[in-house]
Structures are given as C-alpha cells and as structure tokens.
Length: 196
Ligand code: ATP
Image 1: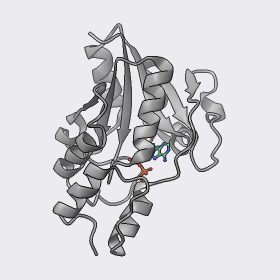
Image 2: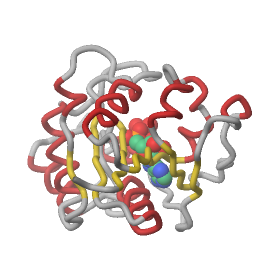
Image 3: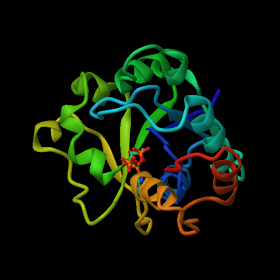
C-alpha cells in the first residue's frame, strides 16, 4: 500500500511537458510513492468533447510518463459515463487508500477556479492540493476556500505549454518539438491525430 499518492487529473488532449513537470515536482517535493495520472472522460467546465479518443489519451499518457516508474495511468474516469467529477474520483481513492496521504496536483489556472469545482468543500477534506505556477497566475487559492484547503506550492520552474497551443500547432501542420514528449509526438503522427 502506498503511503503517499499524487493525483493528476486532466483532459490530456494531448499530454505534454507541463503535465510531466507538475507530477515530477510533486513526486520529488512531497516524496510521493506513486502519482495517478487520470484522464477525464468528459471534463467539467469545458464545452465540447476531447478531440482525441479516451483510448488515444490513455495511450499518450502512458507514453508521456513512460520513464517514471512511480507514474500509474488510471483509466477509471474514461470508463465512467457522463461528466468526470473530481470529487467522485477523490471519494473512490479515499476508500481505496484510507490511510495514505492523498495529494491532488494541479496548475495555477485550475487552482484559481477551484471554487467552481463540484462539492469542493468535501474535496478539500478528501485530498490535499499541490500547485505548480503557470502563465504568471497566482498560486493563492480562492478566498472562499482559504479556511479549508491544505495547499503546497511546488518549487519548480513553470513550463509554458498547453494542450490547446499544441493542438493548434498540429492543426496548422507544424511538428511542435517543445513541450511534446517524443513518444507522444510519434503516437500523434502514427494515428494522424489533431489534423485539420
Ligand atoms: P487545454 O489547453 O486543452 O485546456 P491543458 O494544457 O490545461 O489543456 P489539462 O489536461 O487540462 O491541460 O491539464 C490537467 C492539469 O495539468 C490541470 O491541473 C492543469 O492546470 C495542469 N497543467 C497543464 N499544463 C500545465 C503547465 N504548463 N504547468 C502547470 N500545470 C499544468
């Protein structure tokens, strides 16, 4: 049984160096035994379905984290129907690992809107959070959560990349090297993903 697990949820459409940097920083700084990388089926607060299938996003996550033995790609949200609520995943992990330190890893953009997540007060009781700064966005949590959130600021350099910018580059026919792990780039090419 792991004593400390990280949880990195996201759409991963596609996974990139920013995701890996956040997980690596949390794993090192907090001494996590494993980090669960959990691709969403349908992410909340988003319009439109992911462009790549769940199977492709799971495969790309495995490739992005291949060199990290502590990373475990967890398909549970892609197997659930409807919106993938983080609180449902946190409840399950709390049941599965009741005695473990459970840390939800996120970027500053998501911390800034954490107050809009479903059942966030309950979520704050189920997990601690660790945040990596991103795009100059503050790593201070929303004021309404100040009394309940347990938060670690990750000390790692920010990585300027997003799935949106990578999808746009790929749609233009570019082959982005920065921020796209090699195995993921190969998978995208072999399966002709994100083309116009
Ligand atoms: P999109 O551009 O499609 O919105 P994204 O690049 O934000 O996607 P997600 O899969 O939505 O990627 O992100 C999953 C998690 O990883 C979120 O908590 C997000 O804040 C975090 N994250 C993504 N990119 C970075 C980055 N460059 N630095 C730090 N955290 C990041």
